[in-house]
Image 1 (tube, rainbow, N blue to C red):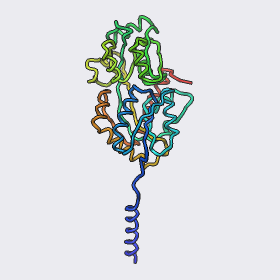
Image 2 (image 1 turned 30 degrees about the vertical axis):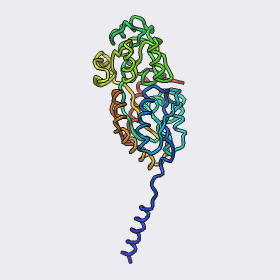
Image 3 (image 1 turned 60 degrees about the vertical axis):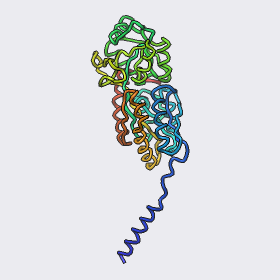
Image 4 (image 1 turned 45 degrees about the vertical axis):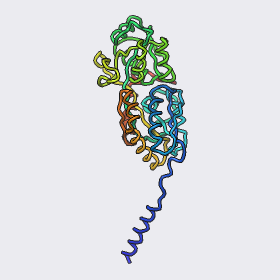
Length: 322
């Protein structure tokens, strides 16, 4: 009797597994919210990811740009979205690790309001000098010009306490010079200001810096990276010029908190596969980076480490926002 009962239970369990329906996800269009305006790195990577994910998920994947508050507006919108996996968030180090330290009024909580899916990549920075200062040809020339006219040169960023802002502040403090900081809402408008000679220089993602140089009037005077970058050959590293600094952006995909674990698992597998697509790999390569897929737990651990590290930078620079 015990053997018969055991066989019956095993048979029932097998029947249950066979009868279990496939995960009904996604059922409609999936959107990736980007917290910045079109034309910048976040938009470029989000659209490349959307294109790679579409055939893998079997539904259209689109990008929705929601700029404002250093990325906080888009993050808050993504955090409030239904937790069903149909809304994703392209988070960056600014939104996931810096804003919680720099902003005294919080629109969202990166740990409580998001379910990590996977890291995308680390994107190095470079320092570009625009046509407003044609006489500045290299990094030492930029520092010399800033020293000769304290506060007379300007640098842009995509917001107070952004990685772009903090990278330049750390360079200027290390060399003992001052410049005027001019924050914008996103990377693309700041780049346009450089090309229009409204700004003198900027620390920005290396791919964007390289694109600025194509007009023949903007120069990359240094890269803020661990090693020389193939996309900007010959550009020196700031760490070789008295500035012990490596800086850039990491980007990662999240879903709203309380998204079902099975959906998060499905999304992680799809994102990891998308990062193997040749077209996506090429987009990332053009930005001086390589795809770095992770598990959700690995991304969560990275976010915690970065929160501590960037919190120290914010406190050292006093880059707080009401």
